[in-house]
Image (cartoon, rainbow, N blue to C red):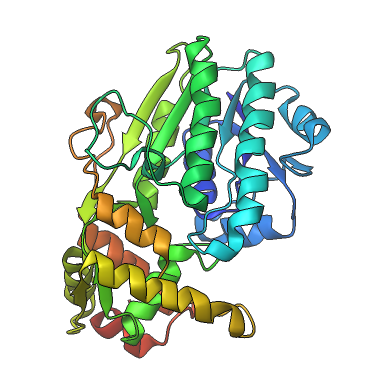
Length: 338
């Protein structure tokens, strides 16, 4: 099939696009920055050449990108737990879902994959196979819930919209310094030594890409696919980092009221710091962890995708970060030079 892809130069988008191409699909990318395409795809040894330059909120650009395509992968979204990004997320994520999914449904493309997040389903009281919507009202979570409502409205009409819900995505070959690359970087510096109580899910980007490629099959109607990975708290994350690197990094588990106070204090200081420096401790991350929504058991095993152990994901990520110059080699411990 010929698949139109949004967000292809991003972390999930680049891995997913490469997986689609390996599976034999043709791809057309809707991109704002064509100069980023070679850099994002260099790790895969491929360079997609069918490009439409434009914005995901531009209906004419989206229409042009969809011409001649059979299916869609909509992975473009702004992902940030930094409250400073609230306005741009609010103005982009939901509107993009409306424009891209709406145009694909109108053309009767099949399937139409929409990349959401377990964040859209994170809530007090747990979850089940009906996947009730989340209850976190902070900016990123709110944008994912509202985008999910757009996708579900099309699904309720019978449109072949397939929503994919990854956990927090880790792994190698992040084209940018994404949230989890930054988080691991700060941990390796020994400068992120406290974590809130509770847990959230973490998944390997390559597992997400494999699910997307497996789900790119027409004729199956609307579906909802959870790709949760591993249920991870601070203990699990630090144990994985230490096991991978051979180091002995430690952390303190903060009670929820203390964690909320700490991150609010950090948030008050952040705007006074010049440049793009951002310490990865945000209120939204605390609220997501506090809810501790466990999606274990909701992964569709019939997709034929096998999950990597979380420690392997972390090891591959840290080894790549050292090779790519994202961290000093000494921070990678025994992984240096791998």
